[in-house]
Length: 98
Image (cartoon, rainbow, N blue to C red):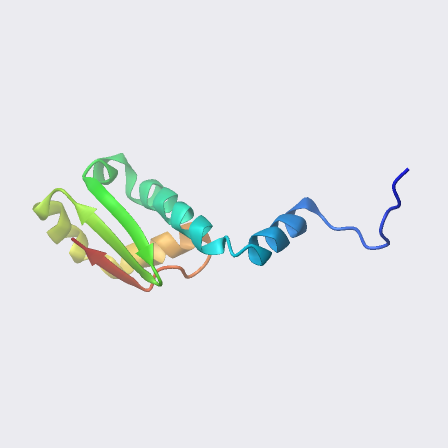
C-alpha cells in the first residue's frame, strides 16, 4: 500500500499548481476569453467575428461587418466589463475592433 501524505490536496489545488508550474495560464486565458466572447455576445455577433486574439491585456477582434464594428465601438467599456465577469478575472483592459 502507498503511504498517504499528512497533507491532502484537492484535485482543483493540484491542477492549479500544475498550471502555474508549467506556465499554462496565458494559453488557458486565451481559450476562455474566446468562449466568453461567444457566450456574452451570442451567435449573431459571433457569426461576424473573423478573428479574436488576446495579447497582454488587449483583446483584438476582427469583424467582417463595418456596421457591426461601429455599433460595438459605442459599448466597448460594457463589453470589457461583461467579458471579465464571464471569465471571473480582469483579463481585458482594452478592446480593439478591426
